[in-house]
Length: 246
Image 1 (cartoon, rainbow, N blue to C red):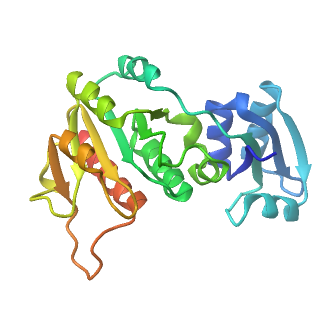
Image 2 (image 1 turned 90 degrees about the horizontal axis):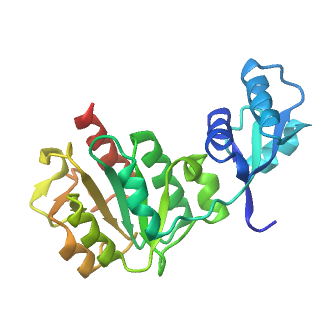
Image 3 (image 1 turned 30 degrees about the horizontal axis):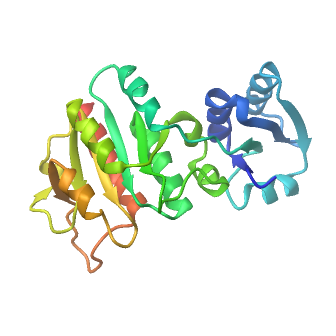
């Protein structure tokens, strides 16, 4: 089906089973492997009523599309994005200062998937993006996210500027990335309630988004290239926030 994809790898499959079991239709395991971790996945899947099939390695290789599947692949339905109405409930449930990732116009599903994966690793409470002129939770994005599309709330909003204003009213400090900014990411306090704002792959943040940021920062660049890929930049920003919060 066009809205289905495969999640590959033991940790990614476990995450999909733990956080999005209702979207998992089948679990495929390498019939030639006898592995305790694969047995645990099978037990989790069966407990959730998910069919478990033993497959040849060639079938797993094809489904995984080059990802190291470690003998485990799950067929999943692409999860649905949450609505802006869900944002308050997500934030109300956060213990401690929220950490948000806000993507203004990311259009490549590979970049979105990679951003979600970094967001999961860094403990982000929600990823926010506009509905228009931006990619959503496509099968490719879900596959690249490797389970993070199920574990991290992905919220699509109709009016990003209005949402940013609402976040500021809740006391969340909006920090945008801009190559021309005076301050660097690494001299910025990221320990409080923070929303990190990154722009699109080519144009960066839109003017109105930039105007809603409380502070603009840049990532120091020591080589010849002028900027990082948005998913790489997101990973750097998020893990700097995590480092400061440890």
